[in-house]
Length: 176
Image (cartoon, rainbow, N blue to C red; front, side, top):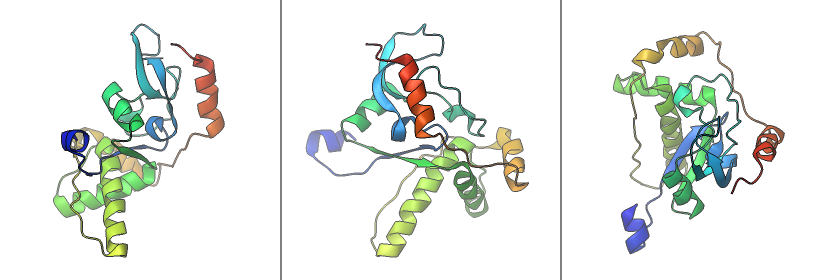
């Protein structure tokens, strides 16, 4: 990232997030509280509103209403991109990764794996050669119940409507 900012390099950075909690891809960049109760200082972030109630998805660490301040600013300034991944696509990718690499990824990491597979498939279609690197943030050994639900067909895709997002943002208004 430093080389992109200081030297004009063109490395792509892509954040992957769940479609059911699309703060980077569909949220609004504004000041918001870092917690639901409003005890933290106001922070500039992409947010769905601190009153956002997440869907019951199986990537618990990604159900937060806002993105980190640094990531939000980098996205706002055009230094990175963001994509949203539906829950079933993320678990498809996680299972493929586990079969290929022998590591069961955490559901949070599965979104990055799915985005990586998308990029690899684009290269396959176009014939473009590129190096694709992703971050495996953790193993899924404590998330086996989520994988069991996925493999049993008990997980569904959930996607917020534009109206739901706007309702949350309208409720918090402009805090700064």
